[in-house]
Amino acid sequence: MLHKTRGIVLHTLPYGDKYLIVAIYTELFGRVGYLITPARRGKVGVAQALLMPLSLLELEVEHRNDRDLQRIREARSLSLPTALQTHPVKNAEALFLSEILYRVIREKESDPPLFHFLFDAVRHLETADAGIANFHLTFLFRLAVYLGIRPNRETYVEGRYFDLLEGIFTEEVPLHGRYLNADDSRVMARLTKMTFANMSLFAFSHTERSAILGHVLDFYRLHLPGFPELKSLEVLRALFE
Figure (cartoon, rainbow, N blue to C red):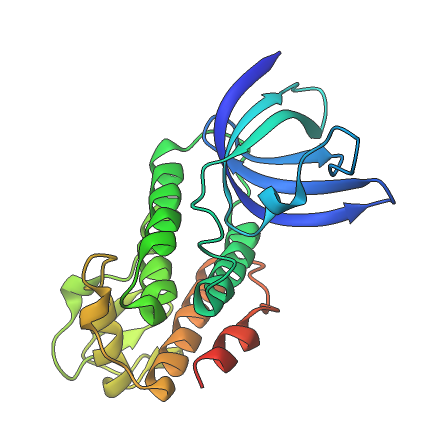
């Protein structure tokens, strides 16, 4: 049976000499693996230019519950042409965030609020012209809401420590040792106020941004079992040096 759905490209993996397996987060079916024949001269297939990290697609797909890999009949780009590919910072952030999404989103069922958040966030990255260096931090904080691990900003008072295990700010130093000092906790509290609309108003040094990204990833790692080391992290950090 054929279905039309929107999708966001998360990951592409070669499969043999002729095929690709592409992980796409779809509006109708959640995360789906598609077996794709790349388009070649004179042959029908899906153009690899459509399969860049975080590409937004309109798809006509076959979907059968009795198979693990589905098929794409037609694919059309919904992304702005080359918006993420030609801008070095946006390209690095797309690579980094698509790797995170590939690791943390496993559900093979529809989740409209999460899909709409992701779709709108990618669209914002495509069109943003200010605050781009803060985009990945804003994204990770907003994504945490949909993953059910949002830090509790309401518990912050100046001088408190952020408890990475409990996700709250506390007066006492946690005995388990997984916490941020008062200065880093203050930065964490600031970041919880960031949105895509106001992210250009937040100024951080490279050292601050790199440190807080490490803390956010530690927070993810503590709350999402199996969260790995990320290959694209060093590329992103090097870009901001």
